[in-house]
Length: 407
Image (tube, rainbow, N blue to C red; front, side, top):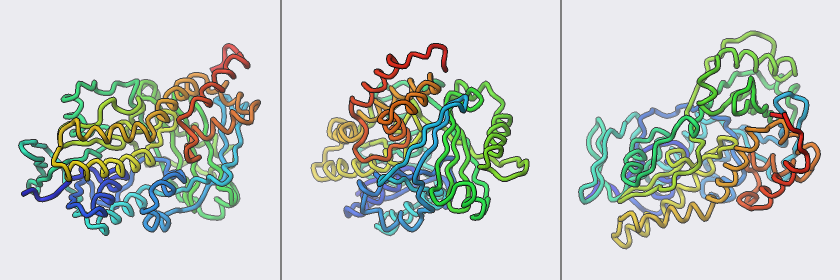
């Protein structure tokens, strides 16, 4: 008999959510992560309201760690000549700190009944009549394993080889760099007010991506992210220096000349994998490329995928069928839920990151396009994405406002 029904490898939001729902359903669950929690991760730390509206069972664990709400966003064109100001209305996103948020989800999984092994690396996998996960502390066995270890997930790499899915290349992988300085509540109130406005700057220093400032309670989350094909060719330290100077000149960063201890993390930006299962295996979250290619946001997609994965695992345990064909019901489920949304975001990413000046300009001329662009970028409206109308409107504006030569 196996030790567990399911082993979840990776304790970030997607893995912890998978373990939470599996344990809550009465399954025997092991959660394995190589890091010791709490641990931080390079991320803007913005939570869309869809997380709680679609995963309400996690509300008691998430609400206490929300720092504050941000009620509007300011999106700047690369030249800073144009700016979209958008009020989120009732769909306000929340600011969280990943070190605290991720730990809260891990504890939610533990409270639900999952056995949690942190500081434990899953080093190899064997699929002989079940699943054996080898760790330095010993072997763990289960009927099913879930890969949630991020873009370099070794379990996802096994699945890719089995299913013929090519590795990501530089045009599909990005990097996020982040710093969270303490600036105090007085400065935060003066610079960002009670609205806690989000700031987004497209193509800082020509990087194919964006810079951001997401204000928490007393801490600023400052960062930038982009495709590796451009980040590899720039001086990151100079980019930081220039971005902080821009923010300081606009009153969004205190005086001083800090040398920030920057954190970095890889981002899969090529869209979701065309296969996310093999026999006895499901892949969720960043491991499966479930990240917005436009903004790099993946918390919502990974968490929702975790819940959908558990539904398929329950069916497999009930039927005793752990084949790829049986587990593919999970792949179809997430495709129905947000697959079209991620495909539309891929289109907008190509458009917005190639001609960001023009896209922000469209937003200043077309109020509906302003709403669409801000919503696509931050994904705050429940069910507001994955439709053809935003794509059609964007294409119409490309023809309507043909300012050739803009980047």
